[in-house]
Image (cartoon, rainbow, N blue to C red; front, side, top):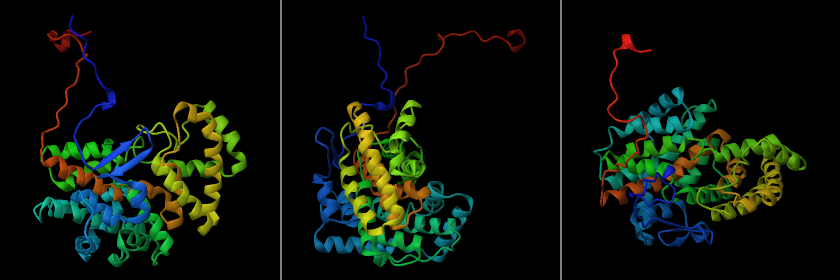
Length: 378
């Protein structure tokens, strides 16, 4: 007898492509980009260098990195026409929608401008400058020219806050961008690759990634975790809040991961960053950190036995707040960082492209149903 067909909902446990970009060691709680431990990259590298690593598959020489950074700086610039486009998309939407709309409007005229690698670098450069201005406009300020000399992280903070960032702020955001840059084939990366497999362009693939990340089951956990900490309000309220939340079968935002059933290796790094941010910035950052620390302590006793541990998004709210990113834009910053991962996968997949076309298992009525004229239907 023929074995029944099996449907793998969500493609869980199914390998859909080969990639040399990242290794998720879920047993030992480690993450590697092209073989390099992400913890070491955070300590010693920069988002720009990690972008080169993911795009080129190797660490650059000094000369290669300098040339890459200069090219990236050029792409970070926005002329008056581009700023007008940012104003247009910001009037009609915000955050993820505005970022996607920018690439929809500008990508159409750029698909023939340079190689796919050039287009990828252009997108990485533009994204932070666009988002920074979107946030400005949403806050009642006018758009302004970027300062590429500050780098991707520093420029984003500068645009959001209208002032040159402190060195620790650049360091914190740069580290967050590194940690968000690549993570295998989650929904947004798969969506970008599916679009690319049709031989659509780099920018369309990015837009697909952005709109997929927008979904609350993929992106958005950091924003939800922030609101959770605000709702709790005081470390002394954690136990009562958690007991009520669990009795109502509410999720503890920032706990659990589709892949990691142990402590997310990225979360360990950001937890230390959050502690430093609280000590340096004080105020609201410290208050959020104290609530988060107590919540982690109490929640672990109940959730760790179920394989639920803090993920990256549990700790990023404190770091984002310390550098001046508004809570409703946390996921959009995630998108800016992940663009390099999306385009790196797209360029890699195109080396041996095959249209992605899975099957579905039909479970409807038997074939051959008789069409009944509408007058005779009951």
